Length: 169
Image 1: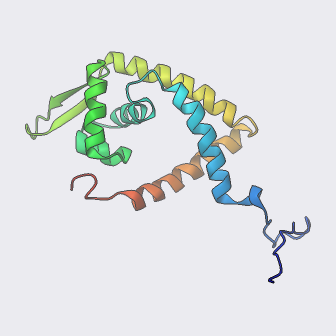
Image 2 (image 1 turned 90 degrees about the vertical axis):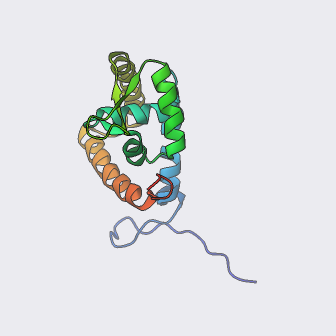
Image 3 (image 1 turned 30 degrees about the horizontal axis):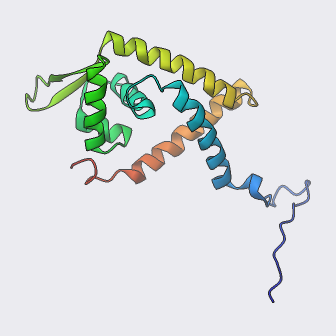
């Protein structure tokens, strides 16, 4: 029989020793935060076609100059086929439009409509309230620091995730 490993909490006065336990596990923390955010975020953006994915597409559309469907799919890390269906639904709802690119008439630029801007702003307000609830135990400086750090980690994860085949390159 092998001896069972027991989790011991390190002495509080030893800063060199990392804590041991589920509550100090990065995977567990990410899972808890992700699950809570998914639940609140999903209801916050449910009114948009495609829900959370539709929200991501609208955010990608407004976060820079007009881009092609493929460029948006890459930015949002969505499969190009999924992107096409989302754009179809968002366009049918009058939230965005696709227009020929003046430089390359074969490509289509995706633009948000006034109705799309209004829907996105309303979803952002609901999402902001949900985020505030999730981050309630952090002071404003900690919230800002968490957002900055998560943005950096997300950029790393996005670089690692992009599959050129998936996006059609």
